[in-house]
Length: 178
Image (cartoon, rainbow, N blue to C red; front, side, top):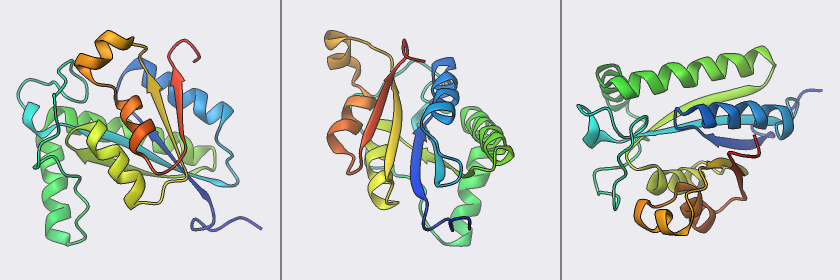
């Protein structure tokens, strides 16, 4: 008898739009995900302050510290959800993130793996730990670019922050692994 969605292990995969992130997704599906007992949560973070520059999710800029307005869109009111959807449609990187995540979700559905898609508005290293806590994630899978100690100090590391702040186990996969 198949498990209900509430009985499944909730596995979040952080996706930043890079080729490495796509390889991480493919590797995770082949090596970590159990189709019969896992529910996949696909996460991407889009920074609100980089609408015109294209940085943020698919760009190269990194913020130094999260801002108070960088909060995930978790409102349950219909009007707020509709506003978030319209905002996604108007921001190129938000639209790209949504399309890529929906394509990945469709691929999972073809493999009989249940999934959901979430775009978080703001800084990934601030929002992913908060999301995993608020949504009772059982496992988070993130990639690591392998920046090294010096670059990580200046640029920050999403994977390092997730290791320290997420309440669930975090699997960090180096690019060289996948």
